[in-house]
Length: 431
Ligand code: GLC
View 1 (spheres, protein in one colour):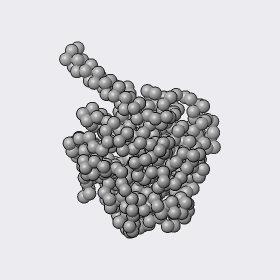
View 2: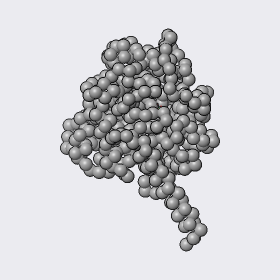
View 3: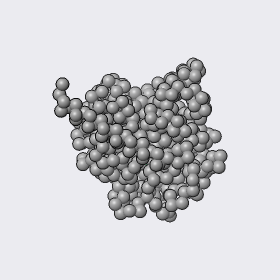
View 4: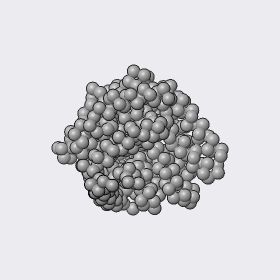
């Protein structure tokens, strides 16, 4: 027995335990009534896919909080089935764009008028498998079903591939993939005041004003037609079939089918399994880019592929989108281009790469988690382990930052960021 190694292992375990305690502290201090804010400095409300990642991380440690997180989100589902990207449970002074800008209320709670990837369904499956709580599943099931039906009915041209109508809906707000479709329209003069770049330091890490003018004008145009999706399908200048949203949508359909089966609803289980398969086939066909060796997004307004090598394409594995052959090629892209950095996985590589700016290069813990989960589904445990290791290394060195420079590992954006803390709990669950 090598005692030196044992001591190291014990010291590592103790350090991990300490970090886990800090992670719980971050989540508890960011927790409000029934939900958790992403960060106290930048995002003081409930965000849609943030809540899903937070609930996933809490499922094994504080299942009651995980359930509450999801239930409070589901309660904000619109009658149509749209699940808003922000729920403003409290007054939103000092936040832009706040409730006055969106002008929407659900049961007297203000919400935004756009959505985010339906991560809530995989999160619910995870919580259900952890707790076996049928009452919880009964309570959230109708909202989840309505939401998935909404994607198919209101957000797809062919009932297979889903689209977004605002870059914020992808969760990867300022990805270089959106530059061309955003450049193709003139937002005119847009008057507003940003609240997210108050410190000079953050100015280099946040989206630019050029992006922001377009973000705001897309919100205002959608509000002007009262968020009518069929009207917007004709008039919105930004309609994109995003690779990441589609991967998560397909996984959500599969996971919903599993939940339906658990409730004994075989008809619904079959319907959603078939939906997943139909969507998968259409995505493979439309979004695969052989030259880049990854999945890309498709611009429905400009009728073109948006050639960008980003983590969105890689995350296709989360929805088991790639065929065997596509996966072999995708794995090469991962090895050659994305794992070339000290820390995996940069959110984007290519001409517009910026290691410090938001979704234009930095590593994010949530997308790392999606990719690692998907890689295991394809039997690539070695690559998944490398990615998980990097996520842990970043957090252990820097703290629970929002994103990280892939070259130096430095933490960027806001500190004490909830999903970085929650997913650290998830990554170290059995450690
Ligand atoms: C930013 C991120 C988005 C996230 C939100 C709240 O807008 O781009 O993915 O949901 O912040 O954390």
